[in-house]
Image (cartoon, protein in one colour):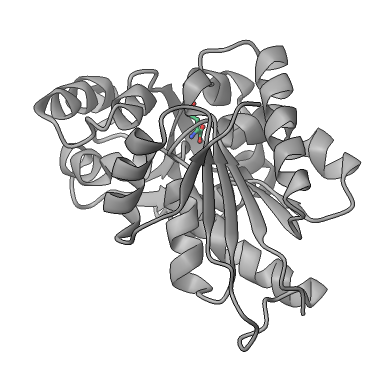
Length: 264
Ligand code: DGL
């Protein structure tokens, strides 16, 4: 047993899609979440800057005495996960491997699409991980630089969002039977993405897949939160406005949350 919280990091609110899955799958666990909304999106930034920001988020979480860190951000996973994992003596999980494995399992015709931020797509990491495991699978990758800002500005249900998703995904239509949402912000756009791609396309939420892996690791290291121990409650931190963060978070998580501003 280990009653310390699990640390989550993201460039902003996207990692909430992973946190929600964790809360659903493992209701006894406690979360400390940091979202760097003041500097989001990370996707168009140079790798060196993403690396520096990610380390700041990691170091912040370490001050909260977390027992595990989840990179609830594909972009940070693509750039800095390997390095952080090597450097820390607690488990560090990323969202990319779980998403890649789930896509291989799901595809019937061997045609997988991957959506991500410019950095995630440029890193080519999804294609590499998918083809390492399944060399015959074809991967079509597409950067969607306009998607994360729509979510950060709470416009993911707007008519603008529908227009942007429709225009961006047109080139993938009919070409893939499985589509990886390779950015944790994208599950908030899921109904629109599904509608544009058609009901026959299987969408893979890499965050939800990652939550299943967290459960496996907690069991493996025997560091689950005790079911009977007192809980302090989840804690959320943002580098931007707590009110804006709270609005998106509470509607996505369906519960009232404790959120505080932090300067890194
Ligand atoms: N949520 C992030 C991801 O999964 C990053 C979005 C961004 O800041 O560009 O890639």
